[in-house]
Image (cartoon, rainbow, N blue to C red; front, side, top):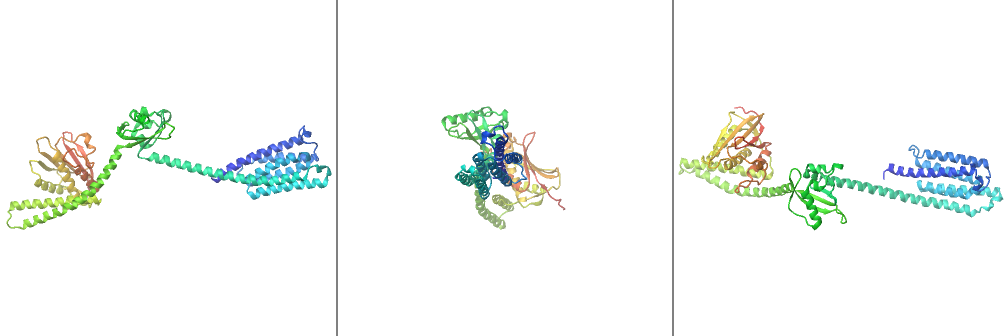
Amino acid sequence: MPIAATDRAMRRELYLLALYRTLEAALLALAVFGPLQNAFGGEPRDPALAAAVAATYLVGSVVLLLFWNRPAIPLPGQVVFGILLDIAVATLATHALPYAGPGIAMMLLFNVGAAALLLPLHLGLAAAALASGALVAQYLVVLTGESALRERPLAEVLMFSVSCLAMATLTNLLGRDMRESRDLAHRRGAEAANLAEVNELIIRRMRVGVLMVDGAGRIRMANEAARILLGQAGAEARSGEAARTLPQISPALAMRVAEWRRTGQSDDVPLTVGDDGNEVLPRFTRLLATDDTTLIFLDDTALVSRRAESLTLAAMGRFSASLAHEIRNPLAAISYATQLLEESRDIGDSDRRLLQIVHQQCMRTNTIVESVLSLARRERAEPENVDLVGLVRGFIEDYRETCPEDNASIRQAGQRPEVTAMVDPRHLQQVLTSLTNNAVRHGHQPGEPSRITINVEQREGSPVIEIIDRGPGIPDAVTAQLFRPFFTTSEHGTGRGLYIAHELCRANDARREYVPLPGGGACFRITLRGGPVMLS
């Protein structure tokens, strides 16, 4: 327990002791100055001493009552001063008012016990011993001075003395146990509060939506993920007086909860909630066995799909790497056999040209294999200062040799003689191949060959390459998923071409985007990092 909190608790107890002391002083003053003096035991032996003691005690108790909460005065000092005042007043008052001696001793017994409650054990026992000694000393003085007062037995004085010591010991031990229990309770309370804050933070930051709904359908708690999934309605559910019930926010979810409460079984079919039409899979559990308060967990199916997709990508990456390794060996054999055939004198010029095409395509396929391996290994790109106009021109010439004119016509646009960019040329070749293949397959009208244009230009200070076709275009519902892995609209496609192009662009700090054309067709735009001007 913090020191400040302990000091406040002990000062409250000191205040009660000071208040009780003031009550004692008032009773003593009433016994001395009041009209019913004889009712308190008779005439005082020493009226002047009795009046002085009563007045001093009343003033001193009031002063202690006023100064009980002064931090500048140490608490043990106030307690010690107060008990010394109590002992002195009790001793003198017993001498001045002999017939009130037992009552004064009883009040002193309580004061000693209360002081020992607030003091260390050794100081509490010292105060009790001092009080006992004062009572015995006062009795001895009276015993030697006036035989008429011998009716008060010595056993009574000794019993009060022993009671003071016993009271001081017991109250000190009791006070120590009380303080330890209070400290333990405060620590446990602080730990519980910290744990509650940690739990609230964890629940608030969970990606799974969490709702707490009572039996009447009122939302008692909703974390950030739940409010996002529920949309604007979920945000209003936390607005205090304007809070809405679950049936108002999501009637379908409220029906699921009611069905689960009735049958104990939950439906595994995803549910559409919120203003944005988010799909969630709700799960339910009771907060208490005797209450209808229900915890609702909302699993975002999109997040679950992305996790499954990530696992699939990891598996496909390992598979692609192993497959690429297997392709390299026969590819190397084909390339080597082609080179041997080119050296043969029995092959004509036309066949030799075909062998050159085979060799070039082997080299290109090997580049693709290397790119797939680098993606699987998460290798960084090796950018170079590349002339995009010359690279695209060479790409088109090579592509025309492998793609017949009746399948697609491909041409280069742009009037600039040179556009430079910092990019890995191997990666850019594969990106162009992937996007051009996609345009050949999908970018044509029924019964017509694809017409593809590759445009290279400088736009807003950045080099840009555009692959444009004149096909039917891409539906708006599909554009958001174009570059997702394994997404394809073709029954013969794998959905990896555009994804690999996307990853290669990201590896080269390039921005790729799909741009629909007003007159029909599709445009894939690649914005690269500009390179220094190449000097001829």
